[in-house]
Amino acid sequence: MAPENPEGPDSEGPDSKDADSSPPPPPSAGRSDRSPWNWLLVLPVAVPLMTFIYNSDEPRLAGFPAFYWIQLAFILLGVSSTVVVYRMTRKRG
Image (cartoon, rainbow, N blue to C red):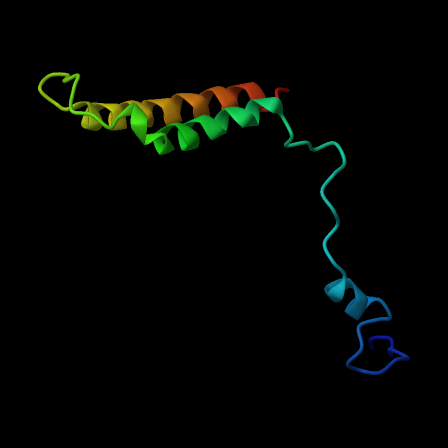
């Protein structure tokens, strides 16, 4: 026969309710997302906002106006800066 619980049949113990309502532990102190390399991610956001860079029809590249091929260059800028930041900030080991 199982031993009887002195606190009642529905109670699991004195700390059972406290364990469910306690906040999760804070992230470990060793983690740091504050790398200077993260500032490079501002570039693909800020550069396309400077419309004077691509507010023209000339020069054309393979018949496409500057607006269209510069937009594609912005995609390459975003991808390349993301790759550089990822590789420089990933944890090794």
